[in-house]
Image (cartoon, rainbow, N blue to C red; front, top):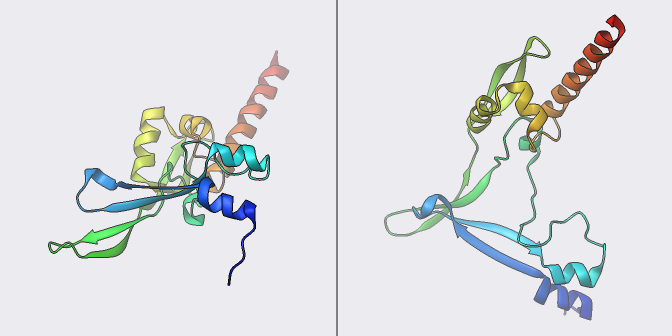
Length: 166
């Protein structure tokens, strides 16, 4: 028999919300978005869960694979294949990832990344790899962060050299 104290009973009854949605406007694909704490849980427990998003946002857990490359926020999703007879079988929706060399104007070289097709469109929209890496909220670790640090270092070095000439 499982014994629960009052705090854990309150947590399971009030704090967790579960939401589900349909991906791609129907098409027979169901996707579960996950659990998150409500605002009342944050007030009740104080700062014990500071690393978890509160409010209407669901908790983000990205895979190690998507943290390494430039995936533009894309990650593996789960859902169902739905046959004509409405039988559902589990499946994964994987991002469209490939290895590609992209030119960096600041570094003046081709840099190899694991990219998604979505990232390539975002790079074009941002006006180049350097602008995308410096402004994107999705570049936080892995290959992207290493190149971002190299770009910052090079820009600082150029600024120092420019200051010495004057």
